[in-house]
Image (cartoon, rainbow, N blue to C red; front, side, top):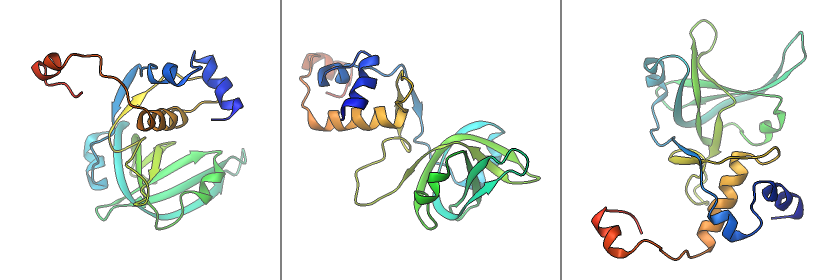
Length: 184
């Protein structure tokens, strides 16, 4: 972590690795229930869902009046397709390329007249067999208090790296772990 990012973490009261490891999420979101795209329509409008599929197409569109740039990707999983949109994030055209496998988590909206199911600004993760497991989608995900300049993805990524790098001493006695079936 560089000095600029360390300064941002300091705003959260995190100055050491120990501070980071004791920085608890304020809630969790279950993004582990990956659904086929065809089943999203049955869930109702504006529901938070997770889907997995292949990028079928990707493009940047510019709105005629306000000249806003929107990156739009169509994701398919064999059961259907969903459109994902990100406003003013044109750089994603270099990240979410055709034929990449991705997991999307976000609020699903349904507009049968124009798009069918779609998501605006979903969190995404590219599935790469060379890397470890998913951090931001496809599982129960911690949500941390943040600060301007530190996204949830950055906080989770650094936290995940710290947890993988350091051995924590278990503070709960073995008899309580066994009695309450807790992981240790």
